[in-house]
Length: 527
Image (cartoon, rainbow, N blue to C red; front, side):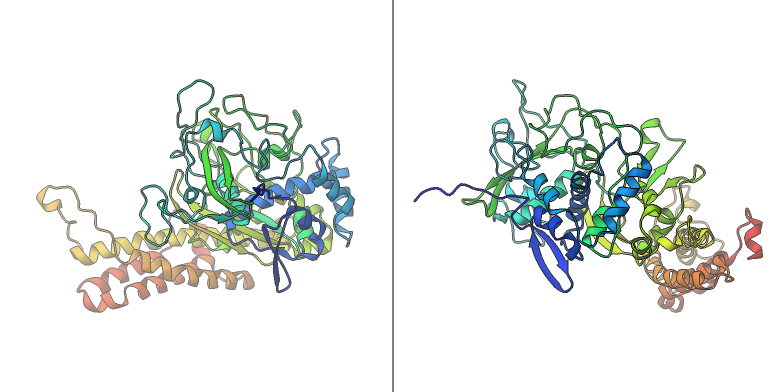
């Protein structure tokens, strides 16, 4: 029986989940752009793969609309995007087809010379593949125990190619550091290059979300900041993969910044006809440290006291953090006095047509991870239309939102501390020294069983207080969140206040502290 060559095109074969009304289907990149004006939104099941895909599609959008022309002035760039958003017919089909039919671009996933977003040299530079379970997030691999999954390396199950591509994106953007397959470059001995994780690892991204995918793609194209240096190429536009021991390519806009910062090299091993992937090579991509670059969808914090290399860092993802707690970082205009800066993509939203801007929401994609290898949880959220609250349009509401978010976080910290202190006072009794002090020994550290239940009860109460404060600007911000913290603490300690001798007195003291105005800011006492 003749061997069927393995083939799968990221441009023309379906692998991207989309939604139109209540109908869901999969499309390739070409159909995604040809029908973007009829598609409501992406429907990717994995938030980090959707986050990576949005960056890839932002670059392709810029390519097919000529919004990647560095010679355009700011006014010309805004006018061109305005004209595109005013068109109900979507992208120009001729421009879309011209881009995906360009012989210089390779979207074939199993191409022997230029596989899409992969390095074909790994088959000869790695002694053995890494195992298919290493590719799929959620599957145990190596010596890890299979607690919640039937998969293990003794019986590896192939993955449909459509699913494998989504996990490929996660590794490129959120991959772990170290622990990869050794790679031999030239005549040097095989080696691991650890310590560098994916460029978006443990971050949360914020993407403008329009009424259709067409609006979404155009709203999230970043504007050129500064000057363009060098030729801008995406990995699938580059004639050859980057040399692992060569100097890094300049961080040009928009292709290199959004698609050319991966620290991982992968090569998918196809099944018999390309409909599935049966194995993968996963290793390091470059020995050189990455060049500095600012992702336009991240909130950037600044710490002037840190070392120069650590002064600017992205906001970390937190799966326990509701989206409204991020609002101050999205709505406040850039200000040198603040320790954070909203995503750069938000600086271009004021130039959108009014119907688009008024309906614009924000898609939140986060992946709660540590900085190296452990993955906790990924999450996604969609805000209501919030751009009317931005500082440029409603400065009073934006400042009120920032004040409320800051107060909510402050009282959460106070609640955590006082719940722990109240537990210590309950266990040791009021006015008595802590455990071990009477014997001249170090104080024993005892975790309070009240902290986590109190915080879990606090945040739903704080959210209700937050929206009430926005509707009623005369209410005291400090008093509202102090009351929410009090209710949460009383809920978390209800049983122990009856059961334990000193609990009621300790909790009452903690409640009094929650409502005590801060001494360092007397202006708060007047609120």
